[in-house]
Structure formats: structure tokens, C-alpha cells
Amino acid sequence: MAGSYFGTDGIRGRANRFPMTAEVAMRVGMAAGLSFQRGNHRHRVVLGKDTRLSGYMIENAMVSGLCAAGMDVFLLGPIPTPAVAMLVRSLRADIGVMISASHNPYYDNGIKLFGPDGYKLSDEIEERIEGMLDKDIELALADSDGLGRAKRVDGVHDRYIEFAKRTLPRSMSLSGLRIVVDCANGAAYKVAPEALWELGAEVVAINVEPNGFNINKECGSTHPAGLQKKVHEVRADIGIALDGDADRVVIVDENGAIVDGDQIMALIAESWHQSGRLAGGGVVSTVMSNLGLERFLGDMNLQLHRTKVGDRYVVEHMRAHGLNVGGEQSGHIVLSDFSTTGDGLVSALQVLACIKRQNRPVSELSKKFAPVPQLLKNVHISGGKPLEEAPVKAAIEDARHRLGKAGRLVIRPSGTEPLIRVMAEGDDQQLVEAVVNDIVEVISETRSAA
Image 1 (tube, one colour):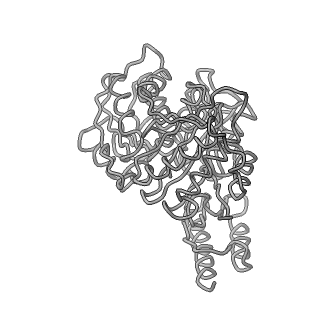
Image 2 (cartoon, one colour):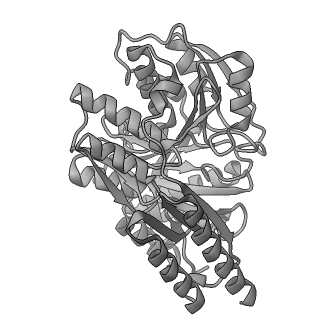
Image 3 (cartoon, helix red, strand yellow):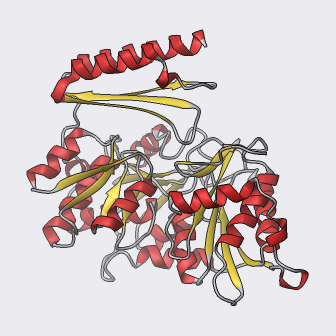
């Protein structure tokens, strides 16, 4: 059973294949349960999931492991990842678990863990849990009279809806706005439309009929074409696309144009900076964010702090340096005044607040900067370490030389999928395309030769 389990966002893989098997899930429950026991009170876990078919299998396996470790498990059912992070604190739980593969197709699944403070676990804690998975941990489990119980918890959707609504000023209403929300047939299919409606908006909800197989399927934040079409069809003021576990968001303006995470961060950062709310003199994002965002913030004497990819690393940097706005180009937006992790609904509400305050259309508000030409291509790999091969190293070094100081090159293995991501950006679009294509070609040739 030995192997590597944790990636950039918990454990993730094809359902019923290592590491996303019922056996691994049960052992993760055991190891996590043992790792977070503190004091002599009844320990509790909040456990949520998205709408994948495999969620039933993983949920039951984790409940077995957690109860075996002496943890009482509060089953939340399908609910957004940020709601789990919030409920860990609200219900004074010792650990939070979200069963989800986020934006991946239905046949994948994953396990995300949160500490009692609502934050994702550090690398050190994940390594400690990972180290326990291949050991004989049964001897450390609870005695027969100390086993945990599991129960379904009612009212958790209402708690999260009220939490999200409270991130707006009490006097603010969304009346007069027609909003299309695409819930990706995922975890927010109930809470997102309800929250927007209760705030006064006219809501058109799409992809809110999950069947276990259709999560993220040609919908949601990674496939916004359907949302763009619906915004045109109903003449909406804005479209909001969430992903399968609702921790990321993409906006569509009234003309159907996509507003990515970089532009959303720019909009919120500018608004908060003008109102004196922005903390730390800048924004935290990853190496994948566009150079245009960095230049836009620089014009306001704000700094863009870059981290490696993964909203967990963004949050860690925010906490360490006292910043309250961060996120990723993909739409993970972290607003630490409200949340401990990315929250698609709360981020969308902040965009809506800007619309209401300024009484301007999304198309005018959201184009804060002209993106520098950027190209990202993915190369599928079936194994090996192509980035360590000499021809690939040489191609990367040549590309860096050609781009010079006027551009950036980011090449990395995906932490969630068997891919090598190749991204370049710079003011010369033809050069950007050329260096990316050259590197992709060399990686592909190396992969084929292997």
C-alpha cells in the first residue's frame, strides 16, 4: 500500500483506484482522527462532500476510520468546501473533511482536510498523516467503549447561507440585478441560488440537477460556454460560474465575456484599497497570475506577492504577512476577512457589491488591466520525470533566454492531474506562442521516447 498520497490540494485520484480507494480513505480517517485528538472531550469531525457517485463510498469509509479513532462524525451531505471550513469553527470541531475532486470530472475524487481553525493542513501535518498510513496504526485506535458515533446534521445549508449573506453590508440588497448562476451540478446547487435570491436578486440557476455523473461536465467555472449563452439568452446583468465544490468562481459580464480570477482580484483589491480595507499593501497570488495584474497593482503602489500554485500556499503567505486578499487566476479567491479558504460564492458577492455601489455594468468594472499575452498548454504524461531529461532542460533554458526580462516562463507538474503545465507570458505574443510550442514539442518527444 506504500505510496505518495497528498498533492497540492489534499489527496486526489481516480475513484476506486489507488490512492482513492475505500481502504485508503478509511486509513486516512484513522490517521487524521488520531492526529487531531486533544484533551479528554468528545472529539468531533465535520464531513462534507460534493455530488460525485463515489462520494458515498469514500464517505462511509472515512466514517469507519474516524469512528475507529474515537471521533464523532457530523455528516453534512453535499455542501461547498468553504462551508466545511466555516463549520469546523462554528461547530467547534477538531477536524474538517471535504470529499471532493474540485473541478475534476466525476470519475475522480479527493479528500481535503481542515484543522480546527478552519485552515487547510500544512505540509508538515500532511506528511505526519501520510507517514501513518503505511504503518500498523490499529494498535493506537480507540477501545471498544471509546468508539465514535456518526449522525446527519440538519440546518447546515442555512448556516452557510447566513454566513455568506453577512459578508455584505446589512443594508445592501441585490434587487434589480438579474443573475445567472451555474452551480456545475456540484456542491453549491442548493445554497448558491438560495443565497442570491434571499439577497433580493432575480436568479436564473443552471446545472443544479446533479446525478452523480454530471458534476463539472461541460459546465461550471472550467466550462463557462453554457453560462455565456444563458447570460445572452435571458439578458442577465452578470453570470456566476462555480466549480464542483464551489471554492472557485469565474464571472461572465453582461456581454458574455469571461472575467477570470486575476481580474476579480484586481477589482476587489482596488475597491478595498480605496475604502481603506485592504491589508498588507498588496495581494497574494501564484506564479500563474498574469503580469498585467502585477503592473496594475504597482500603479497603485501595491505589491503582488507570488507563491507556488495552490490556494493553500496563497493562504499561508497571507497569514504570514498580514494580507487579506489573495487567490489564483483559476478563480480561487481568498478573502481572509471572511473565509479561511477559497469561497466562490463569497467572492462573487464582493463583485456584486462593487456593482451595486458604483451602479456600473460588469463589463466596465471588471476590465482593470489589459492582460499580457499568456499561453498555457498541458502535456499529458503517463509516468517518469520528463522535466529532468536533458533535452527538456535545454529547451527550457533556451526559452528563458529568448524571453529575457520582458517575459516569464513557468513549467511545473500538475499537483492534481498527470500533466506537465507549460506557461509563458510576455509583451510579444508570437514569441510567447513559439517558446511554449517548442517546449511542449520537446516534452512530447521525450515522453514518446520513454
